[in-house]
Image 1 (cartoon, rainbow, N blue to C red):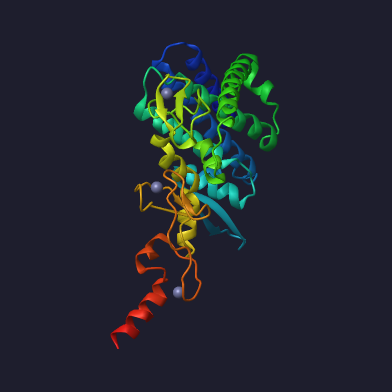
Image 2 (cartoon, rainbow, N blue to C red; image 1 turned 135 degrees about the vertical axis):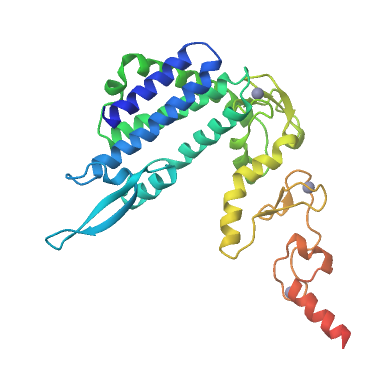
Length: 319
Ligand SMILES: [Zn+2]
Ligand SMILES: [Zn+2]
Ligand SMILES: [Zn+2]
């Protein structure tokens, strides 16, 4: 059986699991669909492999060997095939485009689902299927040059479409209720797309009463009806929104865009806003009174001087 056939079978079986209306089969639905996506990627690697060795690029270890006529060729070593990280690297060097942020999001949702699955999770399953649908459709048509509707067959296609439409409609109505809230800070607006239910992890969150101040606004999960305040999830939203940038910035020798607030102790002090977006604490000293350098939360104890000027000042005072 070919890889592409396996991929399509796996996706179709996943959708049948989902259609079974049996909560226990939802995890299996998600596993099958995820496995199908990886198989589509492997199919692409096989297509790109040389004519005389069509499975070369799915081998995890590839080594150069010299042939009898003195030319160099590559061969796969061992039985191990590529994992997700290998596929990412190979696609990067082979210039095969995949929306990896969507893929990673689906993977994260799937992990959460495996760990916290409850009977209240069907919306999370629907979200995973809706997001997978976009990946599958685009990869089939853009990279494998296949007609998604034709290869998936009418049954699977109509399930994918209806699940995606339901999810899109719910998402839109949540989005509209959140858009009515005045989130005040651009950083907070950006972080709202990471809103998730504290109980079932669904992203279908609405704000029933948009008039309250954003920091204490009440939210409700459309999937499991759990109610919570934005204040309960603001740290998580900021972390999901700025965490990657923070790691990158620190690795490059720079500063994190956010810090632990000196007033409320949440990790929600945002330098670009000059404020904590949870409690609106502002720094007393924003720039060094001697050299004018911008100050950070750590510098607040020096009475308005940066670390360098404070150090020099202490030296002068000691002499
Ligand atoms: Zn929920
Ligand atoms: Zn604060
Ligand atoms: Zn200074």
